[in-house]
Amino acid sequence: MKRIYLTLRSIFLWIVSGLHFFTVCTFLVLMAVFIDPRKNDRPQRWFFRNILRLAGVGFEVRYSAGFDRQRTSFFVCNHTNLFDAFVIYSAIPQFVRGLELESHFKIPAYGWMMKRFGNVPVPLNPTPSEYKKMLKLTRAALDSGVSLIVFAEGTRTMTGRVGPFRDGAFRMAAQFGYPIAPMSIVGSFDFNRKGDWMLRPSKIIVYMHDTIETKDLTKDDVEELKERVHKIVSAPIDEHLGVREKSETV
Image (cartoon, rainbow, N blue to C red; front, side, top):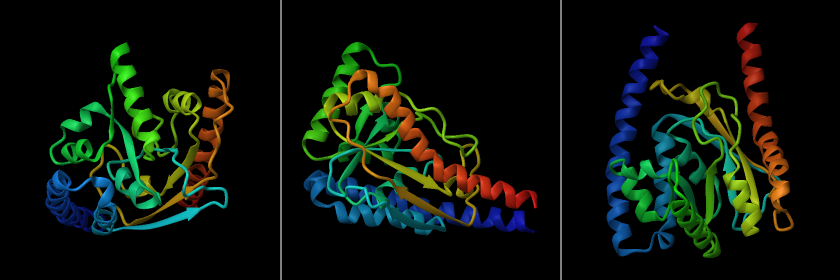
């Protein structure tokens, strides 16, 4: 009976949230033709937060004392499911865009919105010229006061744990001198996961950790920075999964 309930609940939530997404997304894309997306950030935030409500998931953000709400930064977080973008945009208290795979820009509605809103496309296997173009776009966004979201794993987790981080964001942070703001999305794997369309009743908690300076770092410091951020992002997720696994065995 529980499986039937969850299945019917998930079908209903996907329909409701999907209709909301395509309707409002189309409106925001059309709106962005006439208004700079940076000047209509509030309706975008309402849209992203409402997607989570309609998908039936609880939501909370916890800010550490050392998190700088004002600094333009690289926001580095774990990647779990398709709802992560809505979670992140609802949690970060400043104007933010993302470093996103170039292929995502071809997705109907979502891709159109990401392109118009100024997300930075990242080629899967960039040529030297494509890499230079990405660096140029990244630097231009940061210098104009736009913080950038980075899924440093490069893919969604299959276990709920945080996978190894790639070097790219940390090299750019050290090169450009912009800080890193680690963030952990906890409970998202309980809600939905890659390869499974079920939307389970759950609560997502986002932890915004202390902002980390990178101005005095060199290329030799990148590996240490990457490992440090990985530990920070992983800690609350590992704790949550450990508690859940323990309760399941009792």
